[in-house]
Amino acid sequence: MNLGPGRRGAPPRFVLRDVSEKNREGKRTARERLAEERAKQKTAEKRRRVLIVGGAVVCVLALAAVGGVLAANAGKDKTDTAGPVTAPSGANGDDSLAIPVGKESAKSTLTVWEDFRCPACKSFEDAYRSTIHELTDAGQLKVEYHLATLIDGNMGGSGSLRAANAAACAQDAGKFTAYHDVLFENQPAETDDAYAKNSELIELAGKVDGLDTGTFKKCVDDGAHDSWVAKSHKAFQGGGFSGTPTVLLNGKNIYQDQSMTPAKLKQMVQQADKA
Image (tube, rainbow, N blue to C red; front, side, top):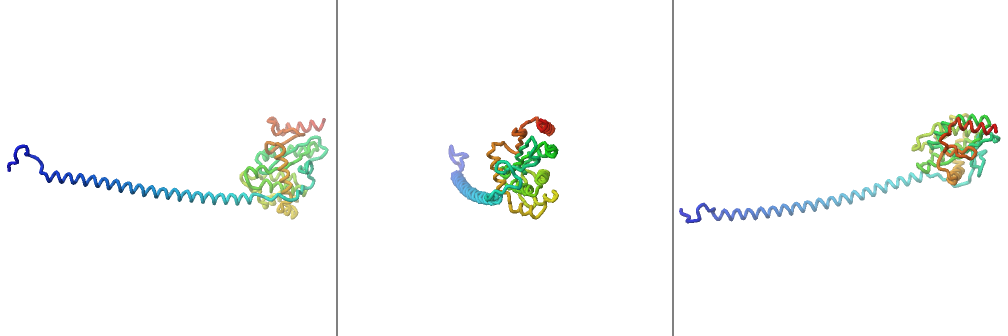
């Protein structure tokens, strides 16, 4: 069939209509896919917001629970030190806050502020213990021990207080020096509040001849000297000291002397004794 000039090879019109319809259908399908994708994104975003809000609520509740536990534990750490101040037997000095060791006639006085949970105090005792014992036994030095509870305040707990009370109970029994040494020799790690347990302190009393008695146990369990310890610590805070241990020889802070050694301390005390 002759299609006439200019018509040769032209595609049938129904083919063009079919292509146009397909294009429109393709565009509509693309729009639908885009709409579906947006709907999915909105749903996912809504779900994400729900999860975030829910997670935040869980975190708040968890923090509240932790805070409640910490508050409860903090309450347990506090020991009631309100009450009559009962100084241990033989305590002297201002407000009877010093526990004396050695002869009153000694020409040199070593004033020591210590905390039984304090690692630096243990280091001082380990280094100077034998020298101090030698000088006090020789009548050349008297020591005045003051007890503080600095670590309880810094780390939490009540081990400093409980140990100080137990040491005061040992003073009542005339066993302070030996028990004082036992506490430092067996000192737990600074973060371990083992001395908060009266049972631990009573068990350590077994290392001192004649101390593990019913009277000592009752004194420890009753916290007989808790208020005295609290008053001693208040005096420490008011003394302007930088920390524990604070060690004064005849009023001069020798712990801050970088050149101080047990041998130098011994020499200073013996020279004062001869003067």
